[in-house]
Length: 363
Image (cartoon, rainbow, N blue to C red; front, side, top):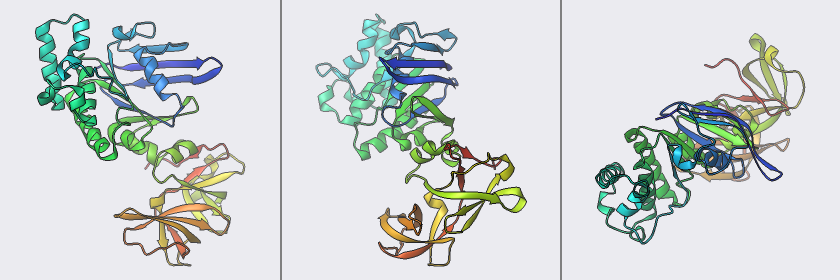
């Protein structure tokens, strides 16, 4: 296991900047997820750590060594790619042993390492088969096994589940979680799938526009997003936003007033907020409940109903044209065109004109 430290990394491809002043400290043994949309720089950052992309500015430290000038094979890392990249003419054993043979590891040790990795991944029975005889999930396990046999200090996973169908992705996600308990190593996962990040990572690094937007545990990211981008990207469905003006409520806390006059009390001291207009109230769907017309904070019209079995998501339009999503019971009777009331049953979020989030003291 190794600590990883990224100091002020920058990277451009020609005139196009892809990373801008990225700094991060990853603890030894930690599982980190780089999460963000396509083009945000997360895969480039991972490849820079691996040594597959050059570092233009900044430094990379793995353990007690600065590695940004070292060749990939000298960094003590192993990478699992989105595509399995297995040799089709080789057996599974030969695929897993290939890198060790090139490194001139003794034959007996190669056999021991491959056998141990196959046991961890439960692929012992496939060792004499070839990749074409295996399913997609099994081949991905082989690719992970090829990384395990190197006994790296750091595992790098570049969207390893994106080629799998939904059911197989769920099973392989569980296998990755179990692998983390069996293999003592620091791990970094690149993904655009928030479920993968929320399920697997100790901390999530949310990236957008070449920069880190927020670093935190999965529930810190979800419950207290640092800005509007994070609030929108993490969470399904995305957070709803309503224009609001601020005034003082009970105890000096900010009171948000919506366009129709409805007022919502927050837990943020008004004196701690910057002056100015352009405020928005952010609401997660689970904090908005469907009630009878006139019985809630505001009334709205149902535009779409998404039934998910255990719960129902109701997409609505307020009188001022604002869109909002509410959560109802799985047995919800809401239908398109219905007039309903909306009540608040959960935390609210405040965002200023620069899309920064503001919160009261942590609970």
